[in-house]
Length: 86
Image (cartoon, rainbow, N blue to C red; front, top):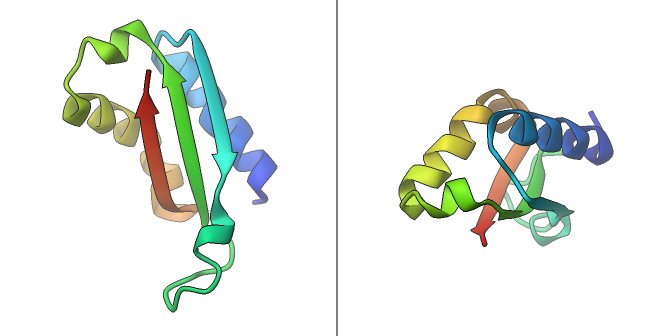
């Protein structure tokens, strides 16, 4: 899987399961390329999500919800994820 495919899947899954006003997904894989644990095919993504529904939850609960939705992608394709809820 390449990063563009992953971004499309992540966006579709999140928009299908959460009421989102806006979502930005950024590839930040370059931050991990020199780390000893870097694995080719595993990506670092940054999510910036505007969602009134997620804002009503605590940051722990909103992150848990996102992690549950992206469970498969986190196991197979995502090395690191940053989540910002606006």
